Amino acid sequence: MCEAGYCEAEVARAGTMLRKEGIKRDAEVQALEDVICFTFLRWYFEPFAPTQDAGRLERIVAKTARKMSPGARARAPSSPCPRGSPAISATEPGGQGSSRATYPGRAKAALCTSGV
Image: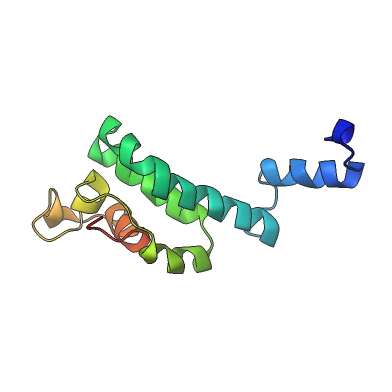
């Protein structure tokens, strides 16, 4: 970045954000993390989900939810996620594992709208 003309302070700030230093305390770092989580859920979750067993996938989704700010989690229900993914199925009526809807499964339901 220095070679491209950015000053040392800008380079240092970019490094802080990329290393996620101050997540949950620094609004800019948290905003970047929220974008990363939304990007994963919107564009990468569907092809990734079939490669994981349901339990592992639920843990990954719960960890993703924990990394997001309360505001991002509140906006996430408007973000579509694929129907039939193990984490969504865990909480859909009649879905696989619906009788044992665990916290991670509920976190997924809170993050995404099924049916897309």
